Image (cartoon, rainbow, N blue to C red):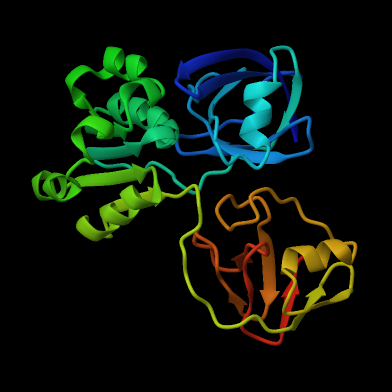
Length: 302
């Protein structure tokens, strides 16, 4: 974990604060557009936020935090109690939403979903790609970084206040978009689901802040062998693998506990995991906060 000092807090939209975090002990870990960090708050909560600053700035990270009405304590603490000068721990950046090379891009952002898109825009334009942004929100007052985007990108950025004009017509955008364009979408579940319905899957890249609602077979018991410690842990149906490991003295880092952040990634050496995450676990990896086992035993690198 890296240590940072909260350098600035700025109001960038109604109910949205931008936080600038300066490295407390020198340069921060490098990152690329699409990456996010875990922010360790003083109230013992850990929350994930997309990096929306400049990857070339190794001294600072920038994130944005919306004040959620149904906050579980993270955004509430940031908006009510956090002040400049506070020391905060952050994880190294992780990236499950990388910007791939392409001659053209269509970026679709909804509300706070603009945050991972901001550095992507800068990188795409620096690479001389053709870029279009469609940015939607309830009103321009609630949409962070509108002024920054308008100033930097002019007519390449289109803004839609859904409270006045309704939702953007993504089907029409899909019909008009070039077959050479990669489409990056981050926003509410309704926007992501519509994008998945109208854009070809081979050209669409998405990031979700909440897990997809899906149905799995009933949970069953299985056992996990920790290869390094030699310990075998029983995982009952009513308990997650993450919790079972923790209670057995084999704790893992974790944050979202919903299969969307990747902080609890675990290496699987043998057995077949049942992947229930929204990230798309790589071969030989799983996320034990939500995923379970299709075999009676898993062997993991712990």
